[in-house]
View 1 (spheres, rainbow, N blue to C red):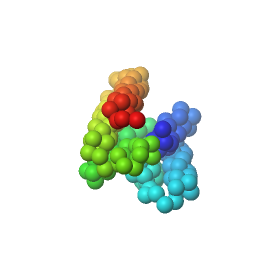
View 2: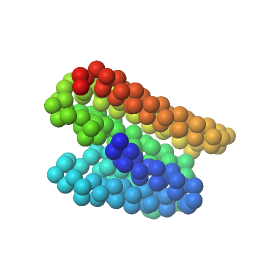
View 3: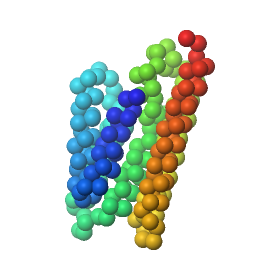
View 4: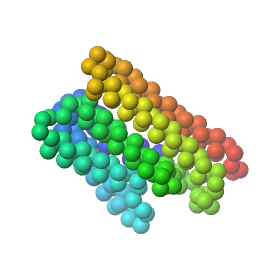
Amino acid sequence: MRIFRGFLPFVAFIVATKFTTAQAAVWLAFATAVAVFAYSRFREPAKQPKILEVGSVALFGIVGLVARLAPVPLSLGIVRLAVDGGLLLVVLASLVLKNPFTLQYAREETPQELWSNPIFIALNVRITWAWALAFAINVGADALLAFVPAVPIWVDATLAIGSLAGAALFTAEEAKRARARVPA
């Protein structure tokens, strides 16, 4: 699915935090976000930019500037909280704008005659809410990690992996059920 390309900057951020500072990881994620956005614009110049890709460029740019201008280095917990909180805001904004971020990706794999179908749109709203819930769980886990020093990092990691795996499984199952309801 092309949706995972939209999450590449976040994957780059997570991986980079294992090898470098939080600030450097943010800038690497920003570069990845710009690359993903540029790739999409090059491959599909006539299509509207995807909310997740535009949001990722803005999010990592803003977090990078804040981290750079902060009077003291920001902890990894605070930076992760900002990144996951920003991602949650991007997803919620897509729902408020009545353009769930999953809809842009789903349309790439669905015949155009179904795009305005209320069932198709409702499916994407449900899937986007599932991802919003996963990101909200991540924000809560990050807040625990950032502000409650006694919480071990494995708690944050378990909650993050579990919530993302749950959203991915929900997405796959919902898509499978929807395909089964549509005649060939």
